[in-house]
Image (cartoon, rainbow, N blue to C red; front, side):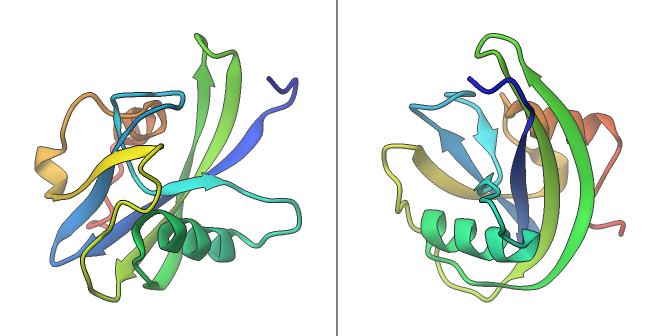
Length: 136
């Protein structure tokens, strides 16, 4: 547990009008659906983190990155606090792979208007802002 907020990067990967979400396991938010992403490392640029995390988790390469909104996320049960910065990107193609089976049990493409439930807290908070990656 950190006494300071941590910085998370959530990557909204778009392909053929859909977004990629994974079902989390063995981590905070277990059983919820989340975009690929992770913690920003010391000295790391936001887009570099986004590319690294998507590649490490799914094997996909991304392009046309731009910054989206952020959320302020309090995980009360785990006593964790994250500022989540969202990055919107396009997939260069290919099929997402489960490269971290200890952390994710499935990667699935969803249309924005039919996202699965339950959603990971940062994704829920993002939706509460009325954000859509398709209206930017």
